[in-house]
Amino acid sequence: MSNTVSLHRILKATPEKVFRAFTQASEKASWLLRTDFIYTVHEMSAKTGGTFRMSFQNFSTGNSHSFSGN
Image (cartoon, rainbow, N blue to C red):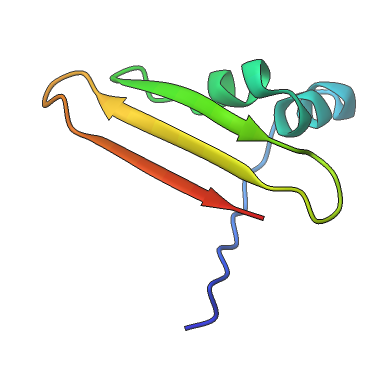
């Protein structure tokens, strides 16, 4: 296991809007398109060596999950 996740997505957005989505907590949650979840960005340091910590909660079940990385 390499502990690496690779994603591929084609976006119809300006480079500036994509940059904001990866560097501003309020924008990041809005780009996670599922409407049946509440997303919360608890910590985000968008810099080399920075970290992030997020969670989401399912409206239907009330279950939540958190994840983090650097």
